[in-house]
Image (cartoon, rainbow, N blue to C red; front, side):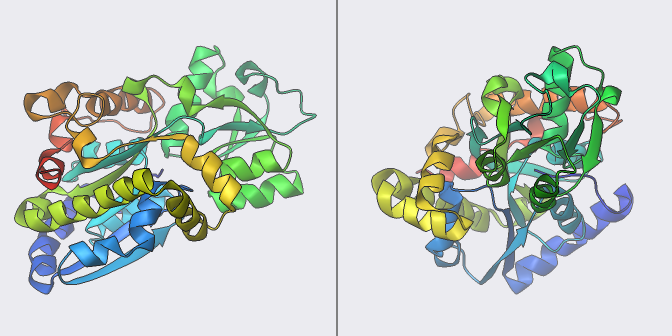
Length: 335
């Protein structure tokens, strides 16, 4: 989940384009990721499947939210980013960055949402009026909050938003400086463990305007290095397969990698609808061929962009988001 880019559009595009050949020559691949809690990505990471599938030097880089990740993508220090939400991706594409979703990891159902502090008189979204809510501004949470407030007929400006990272929210909650937080796992679960109550989850969002964790790549670099992208997707798919075939071992690995207990890992995984390489080409995920233009992921990009434009997070938008969705690598990986 993430935010805005830290440099001008022209400079960002030129830097990314120039870096493509350099990375190809050096065969160095840097994969960024966020800790979304227990999901199959953590199995891929824990079993070193990226390193086993991708030739050359492969390294992983952790980000605590999308804003820093998007800045890293813009400065060419990443070839892939996983665990990122739709809004920061929409922002980058709207600004002209050559990015594409090459693997939709999962749809949030019960692993993200609005958690409220007890005793604050917040029993519904309508009660957020006049309250202070912690949020990663520009992340998936901005889209979610705008959507939920609109549904409840609550003006955005009537809710005080405090921009902070998920770890900072955890601290702010314990000091009593926030009334609510809109966040994802593992902090989403942690705040409920501290007595918080979830009044909305991402299960309340429709599939075509939903909350997804996705893996993205620079399109120019990806097209110049298709075999590496296919290997990257295969590694992710192997994590999904292992999770399905060895659920107990996979959960133990996820718990270790995500830094949570086994019961928490089990609850978190149950809050995801996760996808294999084969799933990617179906309409409910990325789609295939001309169907990519009408897939659930592409529709989510379009609907998210409309909301972000309405609340002033983006201005210009591409004529179509279809070029920003590419299932061809997943199709090859699934063969």
